[in-house]
Amino acid sequence: MKSPRVPAARNALRILNLLSQMDVPISAARIRNELELPRSSTYHLLNEMVESGFVVHLPEQQTYGLGMVAYSMANAYTQQQPLVRLANRKLEAIAELSKGSCHLSRLAGPEVLYLQEVRSSKAVSLVTKVGVRLPATRTASGRAMLSHLPENEVRALFSIAGDENYGSFRRILDETAERGWAEEHEEISRGQSTVAVAVLDHLDRPAAAVASTFPTTVGCAEGVIEQLQKLAAFLRERMYS
Image 1 (spheres, helix red, strand yellow):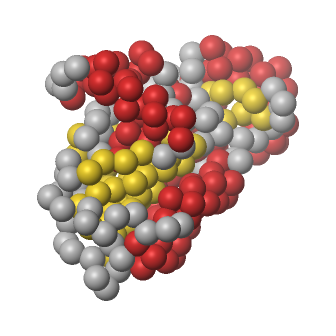
Image 2 (cartoon, rainbow, N blue to C red; image 1 turned 180 degrees about the vertical axis):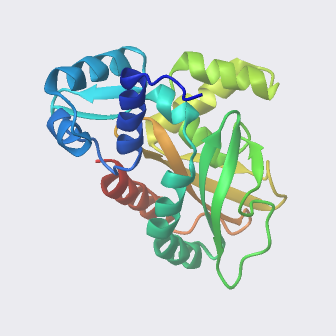
């Protein structure tokens, strides 16, 4: 027996699928033309999807992109692979500068998921290999990304992680947000320190983080944080603007 069709639901899914394939938000006219939808139906569907959080409307550019709900449900593959390709060479250069390792990661609930690791010739092997997950509250990458989330989301993730003393952790995030980068010293690997910068998307939410890990006794090489900030801005411009 053939299943009954629900055109509105099908078209809403088609819109989500189209937006998931775009590197930048697009106009309603482009959505309408790409999917061959009636003008009125397009705006009705978009308004409903904006209301429910699946789509975000950017009034300054009159464009639409994936909303927070869609991001939380979406498969990260379509985003993380282009990020890895774009970031890899610059991560290698920063790793050589720091005489350590560099990483690209993203939030996965209360954890950080490592998408890429590159090492300089002098770097030691670390636990932060591709595919490894670590508590976001303990890592510099996690702190860099969490510092850009709303308070209620941070509290929820902190609670899920099972950590204590939220006040102390909130101060760490406030310091991170003020200076624009995060740090941790020997909380993940003995003798190693890490600095990290968040990569923000078109919603000003953390899409990823770039980080450099180096021997604590050596310290952060001059220019490493600046290069991480430049890389984060580059990835945002290429992927999300």
